[in-house]
Length: 184
Image 1 (cartoon, rainbow, N blue to C red):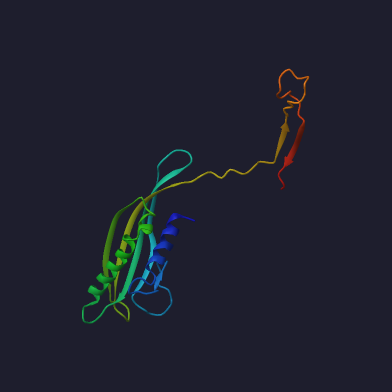
Image 2 (cartoon, rainbow, N blue to C red):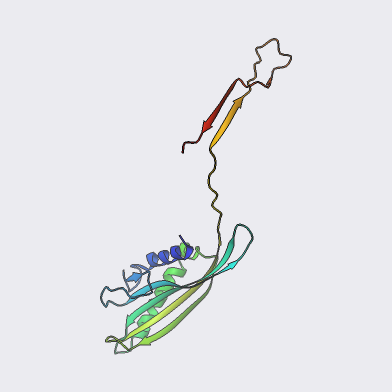
C-alpha cells in the first residue's frame, strides 16, 4: 500500500468523531451523496513529488501534500467564519498533537489554509482547504523469486572409540547423507 494511502486513512480515522463534523469525515475529494449535512470534512492527496534519493535499490524522498477540505453552511448572522476557524483549529490540534500521526513524516514542512466562500448553490457554504505538506523517504526493495529447490547434507562423524585411528577426527567419509527437496 502506498504511504499516501496509509496517511490518508490515518487522517480520516483520527478526525472521525473528534470534531464538530462528527463522523462526516471521508477519504475523497468528491462530496459523498449522504444528504446535505454540514460541517463535512473531505481528506485527499493533492500532490506527491518523489525525488530520487539514493542508488540501488531505488530510494525516494517524498513531498506529500494532504488536503483537509472543510465544508460548512454559511450563516446569515456572519458567524460562519468564526465557526469555520474553530473547526480548522480543532482539526490541526487533533492532527499536529498526535505523535503517531506526525511520526508518519520525517518532517512537516508547511501548513497552508485557504478560505473560500461559495454562494452559488441553494445553500451558501464556506470552505477551508488545509494543505499539510510532509516529507518522508521510501525504499523500493527488489522482489527476488525464491529459487531454493533442494539441499544436500553429508555428515562425517568423529569416532573417538576406534583405537586404530592415530587422531580422533573426521576421516573424509560420509557416514550419513541425504538430499532434501522443497515441495512445490
